[in-house]
Amino acid sequence: MLLGLMLLMCAPPCELTALLLTATPSRPVEGGSVTLTCNVLVPSRRLDGPRQFCFFRDSRVLWPGWSSSPELQLPKVWREDSGSYWCEEKTMAARVTRSPRVQIRVQRVPVCNVSLETQPPGGQVQKGERLALICMVARGTGDITFLWYKGALGLNLETKTQRSLAAKFEIPAVRDSDTDKYYCAADNGYGPSLSELVSVTVRVPVSRPVLTIRGSGAPAEVGDVVELRCEAQRGSPPILYRFYRENVPLGRSSAHAGGGASFNLSLTAEHSGNYSCEANNGLGARRSEAVPLNVTVPTEDRKELLASGILKGMLGVLGPVILALFCCGLRKRLGRRPSGNPRGSPPSPVPPASSYVNSPTPLQGQSVYENANVVRGDEVYSLVYHTQQERPPAVPPPRTRVEDQNASAIYFRLKKANVTDEDYDDAM
Image 1 (cartoon, one colour):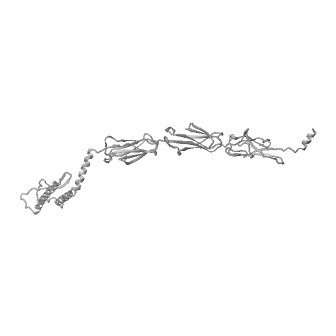
Image 2 (cartoon, one colour):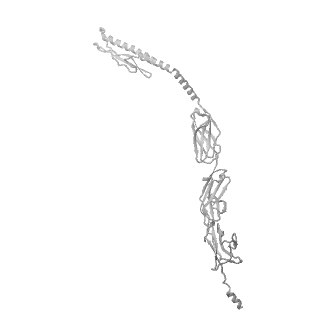
Image 3 (tube, rainbow, N blue to C red):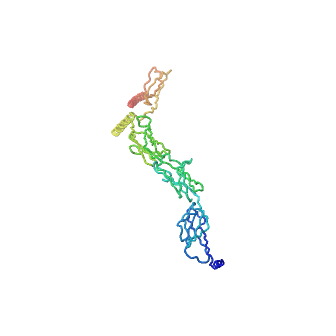
């Protein structure tokens, strides 16, 4: 016994070994990398022989198992990688040393800035085409649950969970009922985050329009105002309508809220022909069937047109002849009219001279008429001279030259009136 104790006292001191596990970074974030290092704490005396190391998490060996490297690189860690880690060392003598346990918690980044996009962009999609709703987050780690909703009431359309910052939901062929507002939500364990509302409009191409002609009556006549009404039964607004006569554009009109459009036309004789219209909302133009319109000319208008044509022809041919004859007749009439008495103005009356012989009482007056040829309308005016005759004396006085002149003056005026009457008769 004493010998054994002495042997122990002579033996070399024991070589103590200690391990320490460290993680870099100590608070890793999801999606990032972590480096595990198994640090060997040894005494000052040199330890002989190679050593191997192995890393563990919650009693599970981490790949690649035993190796000669005291470090282990974890390229990406997630929240489920959180747990209790340690390392072990094994010598050539198969002696194994274990390090103390280290708790590693992987931090998760909450999602933020959730947005919803559409393909095709703008939310305008033609009926029957594919619509894609893409939900995206600006930041967020781990498994993210994406949800898509339709309408203000939030009808759930689809739910997907994946480890990415974006997810897609598709409608293979949209219908009219798919026109609505949409939004999405994303959640990675910290509560859902919602996107803004996005409007989706399913656009429908126009159907073949129908043209109707509405007028005051049938048949259509010159001067009537008719309404050309073009309407497509289907088609997303706004719709642009164009009107044609024999494929010649007449005008156009827009229906911003859908429905039809009208074009008013005042008819002339040249408006007879085939009419059509076209509808277009940007998804393709459709043309209506041709509608005939016959414009009739009233009988009175035909007579007027015929008479006007004949008159124009006669004036073109006989106009110079008629003008020459008219000028000739006017010259003759002007030559026959007396120069001293313009037509339309009565002559100044020249009362006859009277000579009174001593007589007790004068005789009753006598009236002498003179045609003055004053024509106003259908009236002819005459001048009446009233002369006072004296009682003849017992012995008639001798005729004087003055009395002869008065008598000849009256006779001259009568003859002159007769000539003027002839002028009036010619004028009538």
